[in-house]
Image (tube, rainbow, N blue to C red; front, side, top):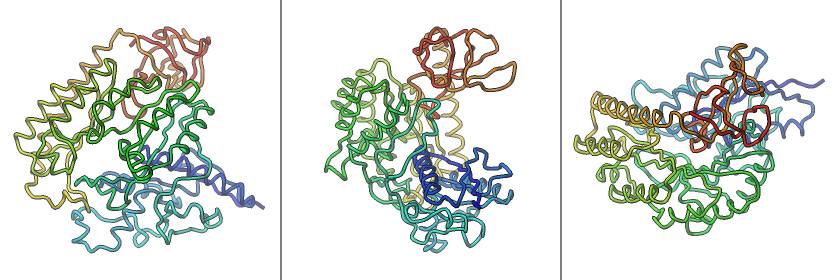
Length: 471
């Protein structure tokens, strides 16, 4: 008689985690083929009464990520689920295990709550275990002993975004930078790039599977290949990707301006399938603050870099991340940041309030900004950004856009449909403009009457269809 293993998976935080989760799903199903005495059943709802095991792949780099994981795990335990903790959090807790409280730099209110010493029904499963274990061990409550870190997967991958025609392709893991606010190199290690030929092979698999948009990701895509080839080879990779046959496009996450030259920005213009989307995590504009962050660029080069993008790509989308209240940020630094946002007019901005992160070098810096002052500054910039984004949206009204259908809703029946005949007034669409990145940037809510025509040239609308519509 087969033993039943009903499981679900929760992916929290970054898209790099999502890629790992997709490979993990492939590995589980691969295990089930090799252990026929176990029947493996996947449930989309982790809280389904039939679900026994829930795998939580989560971030360990920032406290808000760990807090979310903690809340999620406790909810699952309350429902009597067996939980496996995966991903970066495993390395984080392993790192803290050998430190005393002072070395951990933990805030008084922050505790290591997801730990075998605190919760008996939570298990650690590290990436290095996945080639060595089987379903029987998992069902019996396996716990990692080696805490092995990232390995590029060789088993099948489950494309969970296939219906919406996009997917992520991780080209490197870990990071060589040592930004003072970040602990990735501390708990993970130096960059490892996936060889170009393997990336191209996976891209071909994606295209053959029906993926229309490939999103290249790494902690630092600009340094892709330095560990393998002795120099950055991102442009060489993009040129080979660009030559692949098929109806697809690709974009980059993330692009740092420190080693990307202005001429390389011009070179991107020659790529036919490159989406002019620039996610540039600047974090600040003031040179003294950037220096304290151990960023390798200054105010002058940031502005030259952004100007070059705008000159080269009249139609483009530029997004950035900014940290408010970094240690040593003066009133003058903050005023410069406000002016920079006001004049640059980004298409999207992610804002973060600074807080001391355990293990991060910035937690030991002097001249900390008062929490109340950080909140005041954050609120001011948030209001400025909101005004800019609202103005951007208002300027799009009535214009034509190209985009992908992400969801189809039948308002009369209160349900999502796989496909519907157009021109029914009850049909509403959630559409992603082609320049906007999935799961990051805003989508458009439109009625079916706003659809002008589809690239598929059929009388039905499907999730993942590429359409022309009016905003």
